[in-house]
Amino acid sequence: PKRNILLNPGPVTTTQKVKLAQIVPDICPREEEFSDLMESVNQDLIKVINGSEKTHCNVMFSGSGTASVEAVLTSCINSKILLLINGSYGIRMKEILKTHGKPMEVLEFRNDKPIDFEVVNNFLENSKYVKYVAMVHHETTTGVLNSIHNFSKIRERFGVTLILDAISSYGGIPINIKKTPIQFLISSSNKCIQALPGLSFVLCERKALKEISKLPTHSYYLNLYDQYRFFKKYRQMRFTPPVQVFYALRTAINEYFEEGILQRYARYTKNWEILRSGLIKLGFTLLLEEKDESHILLSVKEPDNPNFKFEIVHDELYKKGITIYPGKLSNENTFRIANIGDLDSIDMENFIYELKNVLNKLSIKL
Image (cartoon, rainbow, N blue to C red; front, side, top):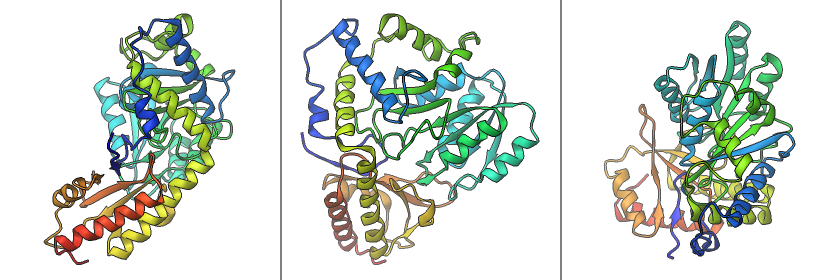
């Protein structure tokens, strides 16, 4: 297949090996052979964050990352939850909770700055009813990275259950679940683990998962505990899984361990450095301060130039096999460039070169 350079924050550019892993003989997902595959995937996804099967388990769903976010928010909440929001994906959690009529408190922060945990701690000091706290680790609205260290300390101090959307950071930014304990950590197959869309998962502390076993059910398909219990008993998912995506994910996990998390993060960081310096040299202004950036996504301010139209620049780059992504801010015109997936420094340098050519073609001088 043709190799495209996807600079959107997932789905990502994948290796040929991952793509070709889908070409397998047809198999019923109820066969022991496929159960073995799913079990190995479950076990290794725990290892990615330095977890142990003694203390953690993994629950998988067919669907995008939002499916697992909804599964957690509808399966685990029986009291008031505090949402920490500094972007669109935190707002998405709020909309899910609102849809299901769940009681919540909300602390909203600037979307161009990390969450201020001094404010969070002060709020919790004066709140007797909050039993859960939820946050997005890497907020891809802007590329801002919220501190998983400070987030994990909240449980130690206030005894609350923590829910972390790590959809776009898992597998790309080092996470050690032993050093930064999180009760429910959510991610998906098509981001930094570098597989294909169609699967999402929740890495759960076993103790926290057991505590929800008697809570009332609010979703049939996305019931977290029923999904866990069924797999534990039968080594199968309750409903038909995306079979070929599992084979691709198995291959992507193998590639992840071959590369290593520190090496993957170093590769992403190198990509980010080349992007950052290249964009600045071209005359673009970045939204975030360098210290607040995740190293895996940049938000770029659209230039104040009458010839610059994001859609036109996007289409010109798309002809060359490069995809850039629109912004999600309502108060500022931005576009986003992610550097995750099977991409390296040569891809980044090529993008900057092609972007410069597009700017020249459209007579855009910055």
